[in-house]
Image 1 (cartoon, rainbow, N blue to C red):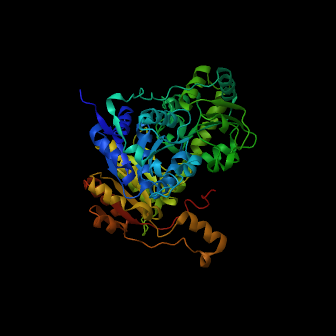
Image 2: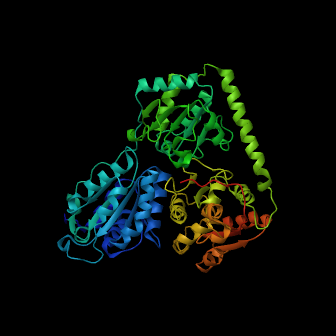
Image 3: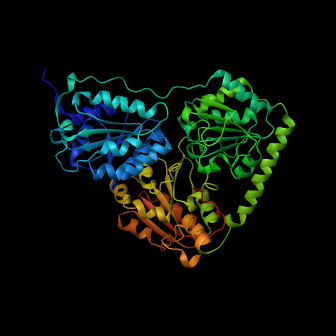
Length: 549
């Protein structure tokens, strides 16, 4: 039988296919061309973008939706450097992404070959592992390790560099050994004794609160949150990838009164989310409250604030352990009063929002815009948040329509520009369901040309631009600190992003009146091609003082 000699790009593609990879996201480059050729043979879709950061953002969203590593390939030098922001975003968001990077040939290392640079030194601080492959026969082994390290433990990005002469090398495919595919994440329970201590604290609590964050998404069964909330009679606030695991009809679902709840809680359970700027580094929690913290990373426990009980494990599994240990409150009447008090606080907050939600103001009130978006969203829609002030408002109004991964946002790095890459991946994986990007006008300026890639590759989605002609989240504070006459670098124009999209072959609409928002959204959703609805949006005090650093 003839020996199957192939270039090493085919080896890479076969290794990816064995891990279940369905799509590779990329911007072309001479250093990585054989990988594309291999993907054609292995049945992996190649989705190309117009900026390398969009390729890694797409791989990030792919990972969040499938709960398996997403893969991006970028060329050497500027290609890797353009991807750095997206790699950093995945690192902070704890998303399992494998980045394949090109490099000059090994035989010319250090001699100044085209686009040669020390990529490993750049990406090591923002990856779980960064490695260069110098032997083509070791590609399957290294890629298998990359998938394992990316997915298991605390998820995160891994960078695999393949020099030019390695990826073009001829290999006997029949003689290459491919390791067994990396298994899905296992259950990671916490220490049983510590679980009992935490359960006892929750049983004695009169005013407990739970904060549940993105790590629960990587649990084998994130629905443990709903079981915990109902059986434990604990109010739950979610953020990040946990959004949607509870809905308005679920016991324990709270959304609007987190500040008040934390300020008066006596026991706070923090599950799979750091005590970072979003809770003022723990200072938003009552000073005498006793903390229970669940995290995949033991080094995260007690960061920024002392904890009473630290539990190392995956959030879903540990919440089920707490249920098994027993959570019936010792003072049920006090617990009922606490829940009633928080529901009243939710209603007061909702009542303050209603004038904005129903406003007929022109330009459109941000709350009214978000209410119209929520009303227009079909079942099964994937919602992507890419913006500052507008998306912060939308997070309080626009309800996720599915779980898991029904709401995607950048995560705690707060990166703008993720929307287009996220949308491309969502359409690849969910071809029969709508994808809607909530796009700030600041964020719109970063990656709008990805509409060309979406049109060309028939990946329709809808973006709604909340266009208030400003970097509002920054400008609001700037005006407060320095005065309106010294507010520089934060003003924009009411730019016609819709016309840009139409020129690229998509569907674009400009909207100025609130009654016209929903019909425009319905036309965009029915257009059958990438679309953008550009809404002239007015000012609002809804998020005054919301900026945190």
